[in-house]
Image 1 (cartoon, rainbow, N blue to C red):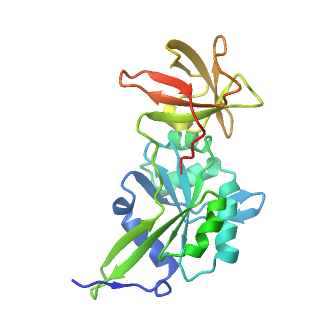
Image 2: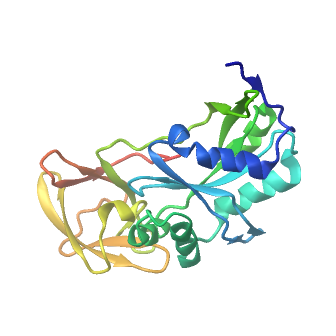
Image 3: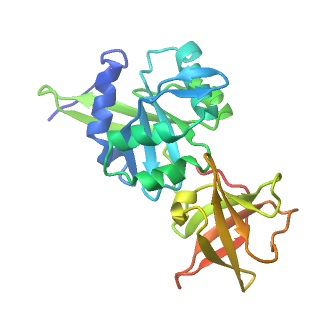
Length: 259
């Protein structure tokens, strides 16, 4: 069967988005790709995303803008990305995600939005190299999913460009010493630890066991040591890893982006 490329302006954006969702398991087998239309507010205004991409362990997520390459970067795309990158996410977004895909765990979604800010991800139907320098300023990924169509209207897809990077399997979450609460660690991916407010966890550090208690607010989760604080405030970045024994290890780390 012969497939012809679909011109960037020969399809409606809503139809392109529908095709992406239909082929979600082929494009993103290690993630949930779900509709996400809840308004996102930031200091720069309000915008409505198209989709959300969620890592299956809820360690990180991306707010997705679906675009046609025939659209200009200036104006709509730039505004959407800047708002999604600095937006405020809360219970209304959890409800929207769960309503769109009931398979998602509502409790873990709540924990997820309390963690690290989601990254923005633009999916476009043809290469647009001119967009890349500006998007990099916002740590935004640019994925290109091209369409090819046969005479019977079947599509095949070709993906290139940026693809979300999975954290190594053994990493549970990155964390950072909170400068306002220097005895605490703020969790980047609290859902991966599955701790409720007040729950305790045992972490090995420098070969010794330490115990920590979780404290959750509306938009973040911290760990506080229950005894003497073992943190080095001059080294603010840490990582929690899962060992083969099932125990959890806390060690110093470099700052690492998850997108």
